Image (cartoon, rainbow, N blue to C red):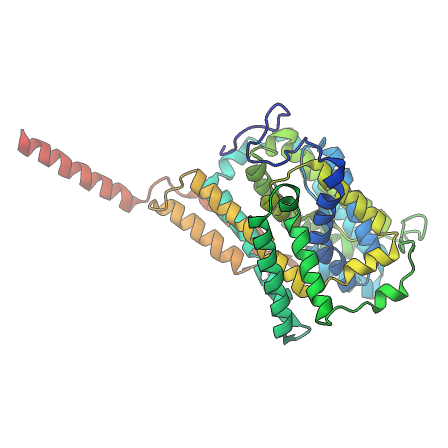
Length: 449
């Protein structure tokens, strides 16, 4: 494959500031972990707010789910697990009808799908990945993962509710430029937390411009127990909600495709092959178990987060211990009402401005895969595969059957894999051109003779 090494503790990525197994010094550990927390916080709490769940539970379950994933993958993958957007539509519908009991059963079904697939992968192995996902497929998919959420970043940067807001856009641009400049001019520890400093700087400007509302912070108590909805403790399941199960379970394959993409990016960033060590079956089992635990706590389904991968791509700190620190903070902040409420006041334009950097860096990692592997776009096969993946994925050409929706990223991934497997190495026209060139060379050689 195109990776530098397997996931071996004796190997150290020369590009890393802190590699996967390395612990940060105590003096900087908290700042590095908080940087991850702030980067994913907006998306994490947005899902429960949209569907009618307690954001504190989503925050707590994201922290617990991340730690579970890290333990199942033997502390080898620095991935953060948090609220998935893919299930919003069925969650909204269920919360209006049968309530969280239906959401919980659907979320458990998602986890079970992951566990079943992980067992199959564990049995058949992962050698097929090298054939199905060469650089010409992986590179464009990684680009799509970053670009597919570019619209969300732009929307946060520009829109105040339903209308365009120039002040919002100004705050977003300030956050963006501040983060880029700090990343370029700072050194050492301060360079490593440039994203956190950019968020803080953008937040201060937003406060000065009066677009931050502190009323919720004032009214929220310091310590507040999340409104847990624990199965068999807070409620007893009265029946099996087959509609919930059947609406959630197929979407697991959508998030599974995105999960594969995130692992590909982490492989490229860290110079390791997580598909082989700890193995794709372990990463899927970690993801599925995290969702099942979230269901028993009262949270939404969880999945790996691109925002946190973007942070690692910028600061080159791949330490799994930094991610564990972020998970611990998330779980603790679920109980600290004012801190949780304060972080929720980070306005959209600050999140949008920082997202321009994070999502862009993910896409750039896809370009790097293509460049490092010297993918030749003069070959029609490569041109066709990359072009189709990029347009389907970035354009979000999703597949909808009833209430089931397969995202553009998922469709692009599947189409890219299929094209890679069925297309010949060279187009017939390329064979003809080669034959013509060879014929000319033979005629020239005969003439000289």
